[in-house]
Length: 308
Image (cartoon, rainbow, N blue to C red; front, side, top):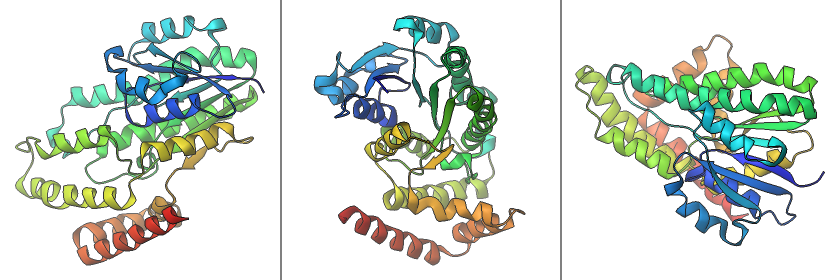
């Protein structure tokens, strides 16, 4: 197989930036990367990360996943409109009590996280079908497998992404098009830092006192502990994404963080849903010492695997 053109969205920071830079610097020069972002004024960090690969194996283009015309303009600017691999990464986050979120904010989140993906695939799928080749790689989340406290809307958008891709994958196979959902757990990025920074200043007057207290005094401190214990870097997720793209038979789903797998395994262990529900409830509200001890063990595992 020759050089593959990879279109990556959301490349101004975080995972998108790391994936684009890693593919562009591939030692075997297997990829030509089209790194896109909504606002080209934010291209500085990507240019720095790309280094010598800039304007050689990596070019930067404007693309707004919330605008069909922007997507079409970007794709039309490519030779033969050819995109061999789509890495759909652009996304936004939202955490907090449901009563404190506006419906407009929820719609905006879905417009990027779900409809952004739908717009891109709708534009690229006919060409991939005609060529009888292609790979649709979607940055999902473990929260697309399992809902998490105070992540109702974000998790819903990732569940939508998972259902969309799982359904599409069957049709895509008929045209020799591969589909992969990359499912990171906690990732330490500017994106995450901003989401949690906003959450700490959030106006909680729209909810009851007990819920506000749970969010501030239980959820936020626990989240910080989880990120410090289980958090991956964008570069680690990028490395896993490259493995998926270069695999001979890429999987439909790929979790990037094996330390988080026991959490998601609970869902499949009990079809009634009681086991994960009860486990998370007890960990959060009943057994603080068990939660902290578990994270301590995972921290040690993280260090020991890092030394190998």
